[in-house]
Length: 182
Image (cartoon, rainbow, N blue to C red; front, side, top):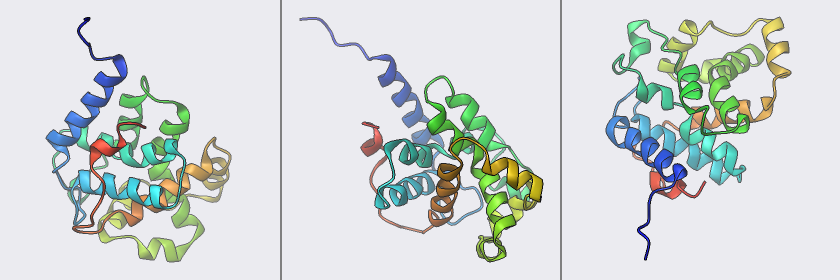
């Protein structure tokens, strides 16, 4: 009987899960850890019956936060790590644009929604409001028009809304391993 060896996909999943195990405990300015936030964001997408691609985007949207070595709560220190770009870049060899674009654009989505709706901006958590300023503030009219024309625009905005919801202390969620089949 031949010995089973991990497939390429198995190695990718193991690497991503290792990052969650080793760095997911860190905080980023909210009352939940990186891992709790990722699991909650994905959980909300599942509850709203989103396609697997968007659920996976939700799970991985802050992957870049877990990989930089700038410490915790960096927005409080006046630093924008551009985690959305870092995460999408590090995941680009493994995932399709359908998954990567919402990850890459979830910060731009916040800027867009703040341009579109002042009530949305007023409802952001204090940490998210601080990071908004570091990320360029609300979009201009021209930026918003260009953003609306991007591929997967709707998915980008929906991820952002789930992102905002996923900040509930001690909220029960599925485990990271439950997302392995995706």
